[in-house]
Amino acid sequence: MSHQPQQIVAAQRSQRLRAAADTEFDLLIVGGGITGAGVALEASRRGLRVLLLEGEDYAAGTSSRSSKLIHGGLRYLAKGDVELVRKTARERKAVHRIAPHLAASRRMVLPAQSRGRWLTLRAAVSAYERLGQVERRDKHENWRTRDLARVEPLFNTERFPFAIAYREYLTDDARLVVANVRAAAGHGAVILNRTRVTGLVRSSGSPSAPIIGAQVTDTLTGERFVARAKLVVNAAGPWVEDLLKMEAPQKPSMLTLTKGVHVVLPRERLPVHYMWVVSAPDNRPIFIVPRGEVVYVGTTDTEHHDNACVWPGITRNEVEYLLAAIPGQFKVDPLTPADAVSAWAGLRALVAQPGKRPSEISRSEEIVTGPGGLITVAGGKLTGYRAVAKSVVDLCGKRVAVNKAAKEEAPLPGGDFGGSATELGKALAARRALDSQQADRLAHLYGSEADQVLALGEQRLHPASPLLDGEVRWALASEDAQGLEDLIYRRSRVALYTVNGLLALDGAAKLMAEALGWDEARVAAECVKVRARFAEDLTLGEGPSLIGKEAYDVTFS
Ligand code: FAD
Image 1 (cartoon, protein in one colour):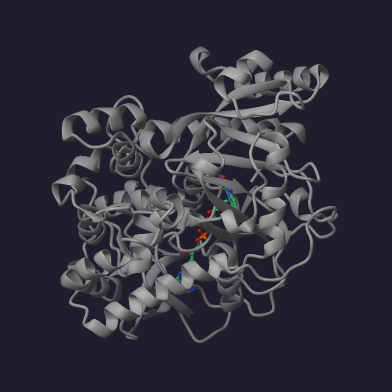
Image 2 (spheres, helix red, strand yellow):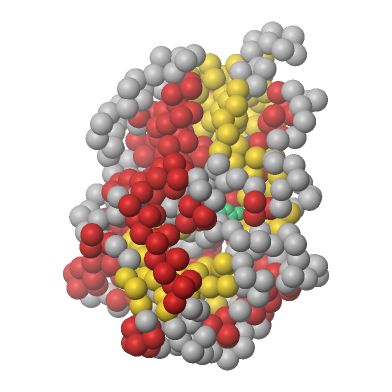
């Protein structure tokens, strides 16, 4: 068995499908978000034969819509949940160790209006750093007006003369998922996207018989097959309820869904240098995150009463709510929805706590085993995915033989370099004569594999887009991209992190067509689909006003 990150290439899809139908696995994982991907890696690392089936694309659900922070959760400290803060704060370090490009250390700034508030925040951040065993060089800095004026001249120091700058980690959620599934494949796991589980298979006709597999549809071809496994893990995020109903139709629902929106602005409209936590009009904290040529602002937290869906709609009121606070805190002209160059919305799957407001509901995960043996993971955060994966595999160990985890955890694909991704980008710029922004972008997306990506092509597919032909070839050859949306939204991420997200679309479609044998009609359909998707997220719908609503309250995710 190879222990190198496997190239899960498109040409091998037929082999993987055959293996999925012909093998009896130890573990079948339903869902290729961060939960499923993390479990696949942990389980395959510990000797289990693993099959992961993702109905859409890896990270197509919540795991591409987060605020993209690997964070310890200061909010838990405010709620007195010290153990959770300790666990998640340490988790940040672990993810940084195995994937420095996907957990990049950044300063997050918390402003304060008064000296009293400043001192309270300092005490909270110090406690947070103690719990997270933050090293001396990474400890927070206390900034006053003169420091703020120097480091972030746009900030309104008249209203906020004080601030704390502490360390958080910026990730790329979808790429973290892809890195995990590739690493799992390197340990022998069979990984498939566009394969939907439509039913569960039991050992006998009795409705209470143990679950021993699933009915699966390959959504690319419509072909159906049965996948067999000793254990089935339900890691379907906002859709876990669908699987739970397949196991026990009468089971009361265990989830509350809440929606979170982010809006993307050109960096020049809000040219900040640091990540910020600022107050929305109703005092909820929201993040401002600069990333390359854009800066994103989010998030909201409102109840989502409809069924789970891949693309929740975004309303004008949500975007206006996120933008309203900025001009009071930064010296910039008023921002309107027309300034947005992109946006995304995602659903949090929270374990229901009746009577609680969205932001009061715990973000902790719950792992439950159902009457048919289905292991369901509900709730949780991106940040804690390794710990969740370990708990799930330990639980599996009660029913199938599982090896002890090796002490040394290998870096994720692209993570085997010392230092920071910023340094890696600088070295790449020098070595390859690239412009510094492009080199930095590639270093954060691909880590140490950026050179391999560049070896496949350094040609920009449009003069005003950073997307390279090499990235398209890489996404096809190594990252299992099946369609244009996979490439634009979840591999290269140009739809979210660039000002002209779709300029390279036609060039990318042409390259994909050559590799995947698409005809003209398919090329046109792929382009139309992505353009429609992108336009819809910027065509803001009607929705209730957010300002002053009780449903909105302090939350940090
Ligand atoms: P998902 O990513 O939704 O994955 C579930 C997958 O299952 C989907 O890809 C879906 O297609 C697939 N699936 C469903 N049904 C089937 C089926 N029948 N067959 C096959 N596949 C199926 N956490 C942090 O740590 N930091 C943050 O900054 C942060 N910010 C957030 C901001 C927002 C707005 C939101 C909504 C969440 C945020 N979170 C954050 C939480 C984090 O994003 C989630 O906890 C995490 O992504 C959940 O991952 P998951 O794998 O459980 O679910």
